[in-house]
Length: 368
Image 1: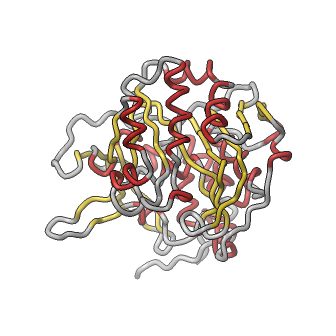
Image 2: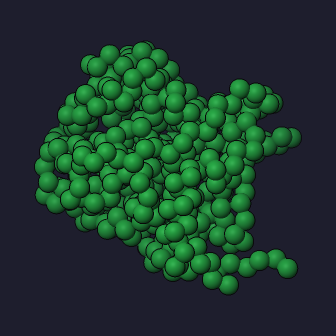
Image 3: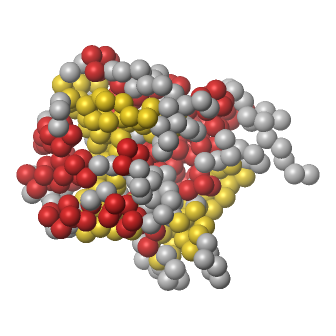
Protein backbone atom coordinates (compact mmCIF):
# COMPACT_ATOMS: atom_id res chain seq x y z
CA UNK A 1 0.00 0.00 0.00
CA UNK A 2 1.07 3.63 -0.43
CA UNK A 3 2.33 5.41 2.62
CA UNK A 4 0.40 8.67 2.16
CA UNK A 5 2.56 10.32 4.78
CA UNK A 6 5.11 10.74 2.03
CA UNK A 7 2.71 12.04 -0.59
CA UNK A 8 -0.24 14.42 -0.22
CA UNK A 9 -0.37 14.24 3.59
CA UNK A 10 3.38 14.53 4.14
CA UNK A 11 3.61 18.26 4.72
CA UNK A 12 0.56 18.45 6.96
CA UNK A 13 1.92 15.60 9.04
CA UNK A 14 5.28 17.27 9.43
CA UNK A 15 3.84 20.67 10.24
CA UNK A 16 1.66 19.18 12.95
CA UNK A 17 4.18 16.69 14.27
CA UNK A 18 7.21 18.91 14.43
CA UNK A 19 5.31 21.81 15.93
CA UNK A 20 4.34 19.46 18.78
CA UNK A 21 7.96 18.51 19.23
CA UNK A 22 9.83 15.25 18.93
CA UNK A 23 9.18 14.61 22.60
CA UNK A 24 5.50 14.11 21.87
CA UNK A 25 6.01 11.94 18.79
CA UNK A 26 8.95 9.85 19.93
CA UNK A 27 7.89 9.08 23.49
CA UNK A 28 10.69 8.68 25.99
CA UNK A 29 10.10 5.23 27.43
CA UNK A 30 13.06 4.89 29.76
CA UNK A 31 16.15 6.65 31.03
CA UNK A 32 19.27 4.90 32.20
CA UNK A 33 22.92 5.38 32.86
CA UNK A 34 24.58 3.23 30.23
CA UNK A 35 25.14 -0.15 31.83
CA UNK A 36 24.27 1.05 35.34
CA UNK A 37 20.52 0.44 35.71
CA UNK A 38 17.76 3.01 36.13
CA UNK A 39 18.49 6.71 35.85
CA UNK A 40 15.94 8.44 38.09
CA UNK A 41 16.76 12.07 37.43
CA UNK A 42 15.81 12.43 33.78
CA UNK A 43 14.93 16.06 32.90
CA UNK A 44 11.86 16.84 30.88
CA UNK A 45 12.46 16.56 27.15
CA UNK A 46 13.12 19.98 25.59
CA UNK A 47 10.64 21.63 23.29
CA UNK A 48 11.52 22.56 19.70
CA UNK A 49 13.49 25.72 19.11
CA UNK A 50 11.40 28.84 18.76
CA UNK A 51 10.71 30.09 15.26
CA UNK A 52 13.43 32.34 13.86
CA UNK A 53 12.96 36.05 14.50
CA UNK A 54 11.63 38.32 11.78
CA UNK A 55 15.19 39.48 11.08
CA UNK A 56 17.06 37.35 8.51
CA UNK A 57 19.02 34.38 9.82
CA UNK A 58 22.69 35.30 10.01
CA UNK A 59 25.18 32.90 8.47
CA UNK A 60 28.94 33.51 8.50
CA UNK A 61 30.81 32.27 5.44
CA UNK A 62 34.60 32.52 5.33
CA UNK A 63 37.29 31.20 3.05
CA UNK A 64 41.08 31.18 3.18
CA UNK A 65 44.21 29.09 3.42
CA UNK A 66 43.98 28.21 7.14
CA UNK A 67 41.34 25.86 8.49
CA UNK A 68 41.71 27.20 12.02
CA UNK A 69 41.60 30.84 10.94
CA UNK A 70 38.54 30.29 8.72
CA UNK A 71 36.62 28.88 11.68
CA UNK A 72 37.83 31.48 14.17
CA UNK A 73 36.93 34.39 11.86
CA UNK A 74 33.49 32.98 11.11
CA UNK A 75 32.76 32.56 14.81
CA UNK A 76 34.05 36.04 15.63
CA UNK A 77 31.65 37.61 13.14
CA UNK A 78 28.78 36.19 15.22
CA UNK A 79 30.49 36.71 18.57
CA UNK A 80 27.77 38.68 20.35
CA UNK A 81 24.86 36.40 19.51
CA UNK A 82 26.86 33.25 20.22
CA UNK A 83 27.98 34.52 23.64
CA UNK A 84 24.43 35.50 24.52
CA UNK A 85 23.09 32.15 23.37
CA UNK A 86 25.62 30.21 25.45
CA UNK A 87 24.76 32.14 28.61
CA UNK A 88 25.55 29.94 31.61
CA UNK A 89 25.22 26.65 29.75
CA UNK A 90 28.03 24.11 29.51
CA UNK A 91 29.54 23.94 26.02
CA UNK A 92 29.64 20.53 24.35
CA UNK A 93 31.65 20.27 21.13
CA UNK A 94 30.41 17.31 19.11
CA UNK A 95 32.86 16.35 16.32
CA UNK A 96 31.91 14.09 13.43
CA UNK A 97 34.16 11.05 13.69
CA UNK A 98 32.25 8.55 11.58
CA UNK A 99 35.61 6.78 11.28
CA UNK A 100 38.36 6.46 13.88
CA UNK A 101 41.13 6.17 11.28
CA UNK A 102 40.17 8.14 8.16
CA UNK A 103 41.01 11.79 8.79
CA UNK A 104 39.23 13.03 5.66
CA UNK A 105 35.97 11.57 7.00
CA UNK A 106 36.43 13.04 10.48
CA UNK A 107 36.67 16.40 12.21
CA UNK A 108 40.22 17.75 12.13
CA UNK A 109 41.99 18.77 15.35
CA UNK A 110 42.72 22.16 13.76
CA UNK A 111 38.97 22.74 13.49
CA UNK A 112 38.60 22.11 17.22
CA UNK A 113 41.44 24.54 17.90
CA UNK A 114 39.58 27.27 16.00
CA UNK A 115 36.46 26.66 18.11
CA UNK A 116 38.36 26.45 21.41
CA UNK A 117 40.33 29.62 20.69
CA UNK A 118 37.05 31.42 20.04
CA UNK A 119 35.48 30.12 23.25
CA UNK A 120 38.57 31.23 25.13
CA UNK A 121 38.35 34.71 23.60
CA UNK A 122 34.78 35.19 24.86
CA UNK A 123 35.34 33.60 28.27
CA UNK A 124 33.22 30.48 27.61
CA UNK A 125 35.89 27.78 27.75
CA UNK A 126 35.41 26.74 31.40
CA UNK A 127 33.83 23.27 31.77
CA UNK A 128 33.67 22.76 27.98
CA UNK A 129 33.89 19.16 26.78
CA UNK A 130 34.49 17.35 23.50
CA UNK A 131 32.07 14.43 23.23
CA UNK A 132 31.62 11.80 20.52
CA UNK A 133 30.02 8.46 19.73
CA UNK A 134 31.66 7.05 16.62
CA UNK A 135 29.91 4.96 14.00
CA UNK A 136 32.53 2.23 14.42
CA UNK A 137 35.20 1.63 17.03
CA UNK A 138 35.58 3.61 20.23
CA UNK A 139 35.56 7.38 20.57
CA UNK A 140 38.85 7.24 22.46
CA UNK A 141 40.54 5.54 19.50
CA UNK A 142 39.51 8.44 17.30
CA UNK A 143 40.57 11.01 19.90
CA UNK A 144 44.04 9.49 19.96
CA UNK A 145 44.39 8.92 16.21
CA UNK A 146 43.30 12.45 15.27
CA UNK A 147 45.36 14.32 17.88
CA UNK A 148 42.48 15.37 20.14
CA UNK A 149 44.27 14.35 23.33
CA UNK A 150 46.98 17.00 22.91
CA UNK A 151 44.35 19.61 22.05
CA UNK A 152 42.31 18.72 25.13
CA UNK A 153 45.37 18.96 27.34
CA UNK A 154 46.32 22.35 25.94
CA UNK A 155 42.87 23.87 26.46
CA UNK A 156 42.07 21.89 29.62
CA UNK A 157 38.85 20.39 28.27
CA UNK A 158 37.51 16.91 28.93
CA UNK A 159 37.16 14.22 26.28
CA UNK A 160 33.95 12.18 26.68
CA UNK A 161 32.87 8.91 25.08
CA UNK A 162 29.12 9.39 24.63
CA UNK A 163 28.64 5.61 24.56
CA UNK A 164 29.63 5.54 28.24
CA UNK A 165 27.25 8.31 29.28
CA UNK A 166 23.63 8.43 30.44
CA UNK A 167 20.89 7.87 27.90
CA UNK A 168 17.16 8.00 27.35
CA UNK A 169 15.12 5.78 25.05
CA UNK A 170 13.08 7.25 22.21
CA UNK A 171 11.43 5.70 19.15
CA UNK A 172 12.65 5.59 15.56
CA UNK A 173 10.66 4.79 12.39
CA UNK A 174 11.31 1.99 9.90
CA UNK A 175 9.78 2.22 6.41
CA UNK A 176 9.75 -1.52 5.78
CA UNK A 177 6.90 -2.15 8.23
CA UNK A 178 5.94 1.38 9.34
CA UNK A 179 6.64 0.43 12.95
CA UNK A 180 8.54 2.34 15.65
CA UNK A 181 11.65 0.84 17.25
CA UNK A 182 13.39 1.83 20.49
CA UNK A 183 16.59 3.86 20.16
CA UNK A 184 18.88 4.75 23.06
CA UNK A 185 20.21 8.30 22.71
CA UNK A 186 22.56 10.46 24.74
CA UNK A 187 20.91 12.41 27.56
CA UNK A 188 23.47 15.19 27.30
CA UNK A 189 22.56 15.86 23.67
CA UNK A 190 18.84 16.03 24.43
CA UNK A 191 19.39 18.35 27.40
CA UNK A 192 19.45 21.70 25.62
CA UNK A 193 18.46 23.51 28.79
CA UNK A 194 21.84 22.92 30.44
CA UNK A 195 24.06 22.31 27.40
CA UNK A 196 25.09 24.47 24.44
CA UNK A 197 25.86 21.97 21.68
CA UNK A 198 28.30 22.84 18.92
CA UNK A 199 28.15 20.59 15.86
CA UNK A 200 31.73 20.55 14.55
CA UNK A 201 31.25 18.78 11.24
CA UNK A 202 32.34 18.84 7.59
CA UNK A 203 30.93 19.21 4.10
CA UNK A 204 30.40 15.64 2.90
CA UNK A 205 28.20 13.74 0.51
CA UNK A 206 26.40 10.75 2.00
CA UNK A 207 25.55 7.32 0.64
CA UNK A 208 22.01 7.28 2.07
CA UNK A 209 20.94 10.86 2.76
CA UNK A 210 22.60 12.80 -0.13
CA UNK A 211 24.65 15.03 2.20
CA UNK A 212 25.66 15.20 5.86
CA UNK A 213 26.33 18.37 7.83
CA UNK A 214 25.45 19.86 11.21
CA UNK A 215 21.98 18.34 11.77
CA UNK A 216 22.89 14.78 10.89
CA UNK A 217 26.05 14.99 13.02
CA UNK A 218 23.94 15.49 16.14
CA UNK A 219 20.93 13.28 15.34
CA UNK A 220 23.09 10.31 14.28
CA UNK A 221 25.78 10.98 16.87
CA UNK A 222 23.27 10.69 19.70
CA UNK A 223 22.32 6.96 19.42
CA UNK A 224 24.64 4.75 21.43
CA UNK A 225 26.69 1.63 20.86
CA UNK A 226 26.28 -0.59 23.94
CA UNK A 227 27.77 -3.97 24.69
CA UNK A 228 25.29 -6.80 24.37
CA UNK A 229 24.89 -8.63 27.70
CA UNK A 230 26.62 -12.01 27.68
CA UNK A 231 28.63 -11.36 24.52
CA UNK A 232 31.56 -9.42 23.19
CA UNK A 233 29.42 -7.74 20.56
CA UNK A 234 27.80 -4.33 20.57
CA UNK A 235 24.29 -3.19 19.72
CA UNK A 236 24.58 -0.07 17.57
CA UNK A 237 21.35 1.92 17.76
CA UNK A 238 22.54 4.28 15.01
CA UNK A 239 21.60 1.58 12.51
CA UNK A 240 17.96 1.76 13.59
CA UNK A 241 17.68 5.42 12.59
CA UNK A 242 18.70 4.58 9.03
CA UNK A 243 15.06 3.57 8.84
CA UNK A 244 15.25 0.85 6.21
CA UNK A 245 15.75 3.20 3.24
CA UNK A 246 15.55 6.73 1.88
CA UNK A 247 12.10 7.38 3.33
CA UNK A 248 12.96 6.08 6.79
CA UNK A 249 16.25 7.92 7.21
CA UNK A 250 14.75 11.21 5.99
CA UNK A 251 11.75 10.91 8.32
CA UNK A 252 13.89 10.03 11.33
CA UNK A 253 16.27 12.92 10.73
CA UNK A 254 13.44 15.42 10.33
CA UNK A 255 11.33 14.16 13.21
CA UNK A 256 14.21 14.01 15.68
CA UNK A 257 15.75 17.37 14.80
CA UNK A 258 13.59 19.34 17.29
CA UNK A 259 14.85 17.08 20.07
CA UNK A 260 18.42 16.58 18.84
CA UNK A 261 19.91 19.60 17.12
CA UNK A 262 22.94 21.89 17.37
CA UNK A 263 22.85 25.13 19.31
CA UNK A 264 25.57 26.25 16.90
CA UNK A 265 26.57 24.82 13.53
CA UNK A 266 30.26 24.96 12.59
CA UNK A 267 30.72 23.35 9.17
CA UNK A 268 34.36 22.97 8.15
CA UNK A 269 34.66 22.82 4.38
CA UNK A 270 38.41 23.34 4.20
CA UNK A 271 38.54 19.83 2.78
CA UNK A 272 35.19 18.48 1.66
CA UNK A 273 34.32 14.94 0.63
CA UNK A 274 32.52 13.97 -2.58
CA UNK A 275 31.46 10.69 -4.11
CA UNK A 276 31.15 7.76 -1.72
CA UNK A 277 30.71 9.72 1.50
CA UNK A 278 30.61 9.76 4.43
CA UNK A 279 33.72 7.55 4.65
CA UNK A 280 34.87 6.31 1.25
CA UNK A 281 34.72 9.51 -0.78
CA UNK A 282 37.46 11.66 -2.24
CA UNK A 283 38.89 15.02 -1.22
CA UNK A 284 37.59 18.39 -2.45
CA UNK A 285 39.93 21.35 -1.90
CA UNK A 286 37.29 23.93 -0.92
CA UNK A 287 38.73 26.07 1.92
CA UNK A 288 35.45 27.39 3.29
CA UNK A 289 33.65 27.49 6.63
CA UNK A 290 29.98 28.01 7.52
CA UNK A 291 28.81 29.10 10.98
CA UNK A 292 25.31 29.93 12.25
CA UNK A 293 23.09 29.62 15.31
CA UNK A 294 20.36 28.68 12.78
CA UNK A 295 21.41 25.11 12.06
CA UNK A 296 18.91 24.69 9.22
CA UNK A 297 20.21 27.83 7.51
CA UNK A 298 23.78 26.59 7.94
CA UNK A 299 23.03 23.21 6.35
CA UNK A 300 21.14 24.93 3.55
CA UNK A 301 24.15 27.12 2.78
CA UNK A 302 26.38 24.04 3.01
CA UNK A 303 24.27 22.22 0.44
CA UNK A 304 24.46 25.18 -1.95
CA UNK A 305 28.24 25.28 -1.48
CA UNK A 306 28.37 21.64 -2.66
CA UNK A 307 26.20 22.41 -5.68
CA UNK A 308 23.30 20.42 -4.22
CA UNK A 309 19.71 21.65 -4.20
CA UNK A 310 18.78 21.54 -0.48
CA UNK A 311 15.29 20.40 -1.44
CA UNK A 312 16.80 17.21 -2.87
CA UNK A 313 17.96 16.35 0.66
CA UNK A 314 14.93 14.64 2.20
CA UNK A 315 15.26 15.82 5.79
CA UNK A 316 16.02 19.43 4.77
CA UNK A 317 13.00 19.35 2.48
CA UNK A 318 10.78 18.13 5.31
CA UNK A 319 12.18 20.68 7.77
CA UNK A 320 11.58 23.49 5.27
CA UNK A 321 7.86 23.16 5.98
CA UNK A 322 8.39 23.85 9.70
CA UNK A 323 9.49 26.85 11.73
CA UNK A 324 12.73 25.43 13.16
CA UNK A 325 14.99 27.41 10.82
CA UNK A 326 15.48 29.08 7.46
CA UNK A 327 15.99 27.41 4.07
CA UNK A 328 15.53 30.45 1.82
CA UNK A 329 18.85 32.09 0.92
CA UNK A 330 17.08 35.37 0.15
CA UNK A 331 15.96 35.52 3.78
CA UNK A 332 19.45 35.02 5.18
CA UNK A 333 22.12 37.59 5.95
CA UNK A 334 25.33 36.09 4.61
CA UNK A 335 28.36 37.54 6.39
CA UNK A 336 31.24 37.17 3.96
CA UNK A 337 31.50 36.20 0.32
CA UNK A 338 28.33 35.38 -1.65
CA UNK A 339 27.46 31.69 -1.54
CA UNK A 340 27.47 31.35 -5.33
CA UNK A 341 31.02 32.71 -5.53
CA UNK A 342 32.39 29.96 -3.29
CA UNK A 343 30.21 27.07 -4.49
CA UNK A 344 31.68 23.98 -6.13
CA UNK A 345 29.94 21.05 -7.81
CA UNK A 346 30.50 17.95 -5.69
CA UNK A 347 30.15 14.56 -7.36
CA UNK A 348 27.40 12.54 -5.71
CA UNK A 349 27.54 8.86 -4.81
CA UNK A 350 26.65 6.04 -7.20
CA UNK A 351 23.51 5.34 -5.16
CA UNK A 352 22.00 8.80 -5.63
CA UNK A 353 18.91 7.50 -7.47
CA UNK A 354 18.09 5.25 -4.55
CA UNK A 355 18.72 8.10 -2.10
CA UNK A 356 16.16 10.25 -3.91
CA UNK A 357 13.42 7.62 -3.56
CA UNK A 358 12.09 9.60 -0.57
CA UNK A 359 10.39 11.81 -3.18
CA UNK A 360 8.00 9.02 -4.16
CA UNK A 361 5.44 7.20 -1.96
CA UNK A 362 6.90 4.32 -0.01
CA UNK A 363 5.57 0.78 -0.29
CA UNK A 364 5.08 -0.89 3.07
CA UNK A 365 3.83 -4.37 3.95
CA UNK A 366 1.81 -4.91 7.09
CA UNK A 367 1.74 -8.32 8.73
CA UNK A 368 -1.68 -10.00 8.78
